[in-house]
Image (cartoon, rainbow, N blue to C red; front, side, top):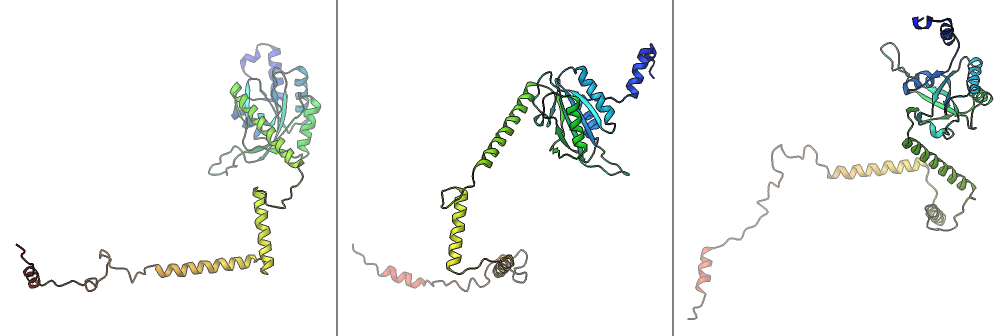
Length: 294
């Protein structure tokens, strides 16, 4: 026990109480979040929206006593921002607390060495408390559901802790808006009755159905049976064989190639060339036949 805690009996009692009684881990950095919460089998994280009220402290103490095998932790979300997690939780409101339960899927933080094998990348899943505010009953129900095997949502990336800024809040708000738009479009598509394309209306689906209709008419008119996968594979094999045979006709074999350094040309090229013999006497005769008109 450090000497500074031995000054009074009250200080020693407080220290022993903290050491012996279970308490929620205080998280301020990403490394602490991974080691003290995400790497545990099950972890309940309280995101404080400000100074916690006495009933919140009492509720956490009861959870610690009821679930000794579950790790509990807390973080001040009024000052810190959890990237890759905020968009899955109710939107932050100053003074309101939020609660989420993590359950490790696979992996871990150990990189391994010569004697131990690496655990692989840490993967986790979440189950957030959807109702605003926290209470013992709501948090107790959420933890109990996780322990009983309720389906949880896997997150693609682990949360990272950053200082809360307006820029991060705006980025998170845009993510929420995109998720709402996607959910709205999906709901509208689910409500639409299935479309029937009786004719080519210019859409991609209409053109595809038009091609299928014409193909079916052609097959029925010419008594064409659809080819089986085995027949298609045999046709492809024969096509490749024909391509290899045609390519072999144009390829130069090693025995036909000229020696290294020799020019590639026809050896009898001079025999194919014909020259006109020019007689010098004929040239003189041509000059004599020119008439002098002077």
